[in-house]
Image (cartoon, rainbow, N blue to C red; front, top):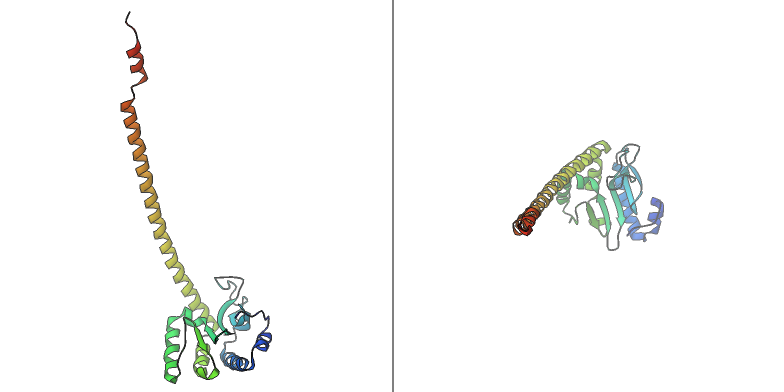
Length: 206
């Protein structure tokens, strides 16, 4: 659910007591382990932790007006969720996170970058704390820029190949069209006598 709250306190106040308690507990774990370069605030209708423009002026590539997201915490319709963008941009971190979680014996309900939970006891809070602490703001920026660069190269290469294929197809079609026109002109030329020939054939003998 996307909240219209403009502050974290407002967001928490909107939640039912059980969810407020769970979200607040996870929030505290994040704050206790968060590098000082990150900031907390509302982003995309959720409690967000981001790299401020003062540190990373380029902002989020999807919307440069938004600061670079690092993590988010939200109460959704059927569950609560912790979004770890650091796991999304760094596969090694994602693998480490899953391995550490498995050691706790708790079931991990995880998508590409979000951990879904219905109650606080579902979570391995110590692993979440370690994951946050393992990612200083400068390292996160480096990982993010590398991921964006690699994604950009792939998109560019794919676009270039498509453009070349389209160009070859268009060139082939144009060549066939030109050949047809030339053939038609030659056929017409053979079929139609010249003007001089017409004059010669119509001239009366004296």
